[in-house]
Length: 268
Ligand SMILES: [Fe+2]
Ligand SMILES: [Fe+2]
Image 1 (spheres, rainbow, N blue to C red):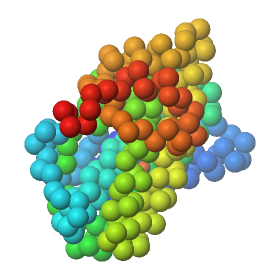
Image 2 (image 1 turned 90 degrees about the vertical axis):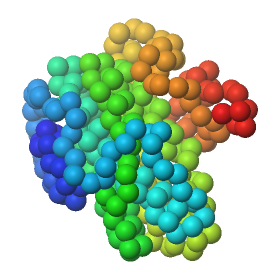
Image 3 (image 1 turned 90 degrees about the horizontal axis):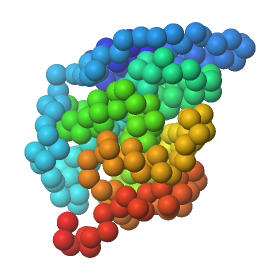
């Protein structure tokens, strides 16, 4: 099921399939069964639509957030992140089938993938209401690089994807909501609030399973986190951090502050 989602290119089709497979999984769980997880051969890169054009993060043009074009650019970037997130959650299920994990691990990532699929569609609807669509602008390849870099290291994957990248979403989403509040775009504000609320859970699942695996190997989670983020994440973490939501998600300050870029914002 995970590989089927990963190998479907179109965003609406990928997310429809993702919803369908999540429903199948949870129907089985509610019936007291667990669908055997087995092993699979997920593609190193998931299938993606022809558009958007994928550029190096440095080559993606920046737009002023105050203008309608700037707001479309923000939503386009969010839609791209959500689509990557759908693939990332199915990928962790398919990629690490050789690491024995309890059924709750799969419950959490199937639920996350289901939610990301909803997020993608919500943001696509907003883009379409604004006269644009996902694929209208270029997007960047940065997120999937994290997946490729950690394709053989489940702890590295948990550290970099939910605990760094998705936690970063918690830092930046309130500012985005503010931009759309200034513009009075009610539908988008609602969509971003749904995303903001549900993303806390994804970070929390990352932290939970990271700690679980560190316990299995009798390792100190904080030290391992620092080691793996330095190994796999390119660059320092960017403050300001949303300390409150990070704490809600089980991510204490002594995990992320030692990895932060401490130079003043002006010099960056
Ligand atoms: Fe999301
Ligand atoms: Fe997420």
